[in-house]
Amino acid sequence: MFVLSLQLIDLYWTVIPVMLVHYYASHPYQRSDSKRSRTIVWLTWVWSIRLTHNYFRREGWAWGDREDWRFADLRKKLGGHWWWVSFFAVYVSQQ
Image (tube, rainbow, N blue to C red; front, side):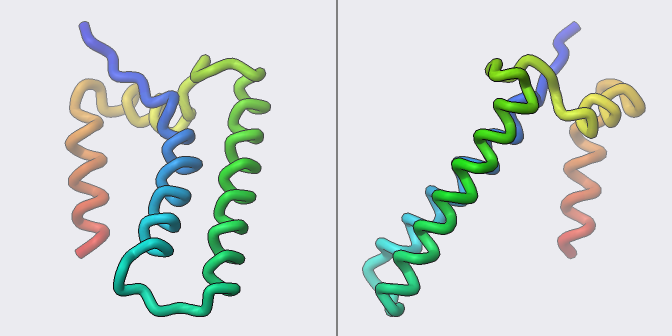
């Protein structure tokens, strides 16, 4: 039986915001205060580095040894149907 592991989901939270802030900062139609923009980019990088450090510290400096307990608990409770139940719950909560 195939078991999907989501142990690296936390690392996405360290990468995606940095990518988004650089996308919006470099957008050709953006109009903003350059000092404020540089400050936000810098703060996002600091936040990302701090989050990455805490992730690896929590994992014992290993890459994805254990999964976030919330996803493991959801998979244990719902079996093979957890992914579509969680997708539906997120979709409904956005409406």
